[in-house]
Image (cartoon, rainbow, N blue to C red; front, side, top):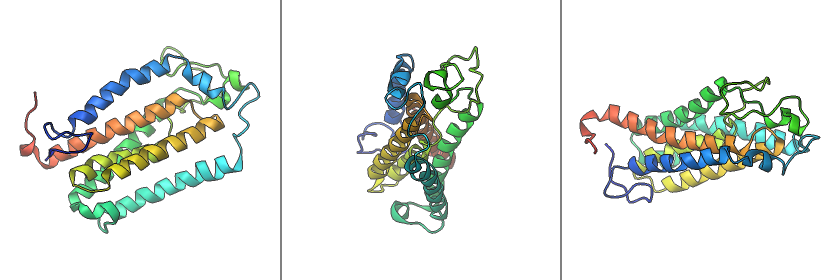
Length: 240
């Protein structure tokens, strides 16, 4: 059952999903505004130019920030799965069914990014003509044409290594875990660090990272809402 919350993202007078949903709606036009502002190319120009991106193959960016961080993300997801039966940290404050819900929310957030990325025709910045590649720039919102490249570069999959764990916040907060907001803050921070590290290499634009954050947040509260509704269908009071 969704319970009142004293957290800034859930007030004591409304069900805890309303303010997260409102935040998703508020951020949506802001993200669209960034998409159509031309900010992607301007920001990418800070890291690269007509001769490419100097840090694209730097060992720290490749081995640590990309491959290492990705491996740690999967290890942490596995730890959350194991935590369903052998809880650790904040998971100890949750019932087994709630731990299942938290894990599924994170998985749903990851899958949302993977699914959209799989259908995307958007090519990565380092392959674009403006940065020394062979592919013309085409907005990821221009569904009428393909840029002719390899695609599958939108949204930012690597940033989801951090952002996907935002989805656990809703279950942790509902269960009263004292570290729920800390978990949320760390997931946001990690997502942006990993997202920007890939932007510096030329693997993604800023919009790719921002949309990944929005997707993980939105899918996070939606999956939590659906799971909780399935578990307690009679306890979901109608809203107006």
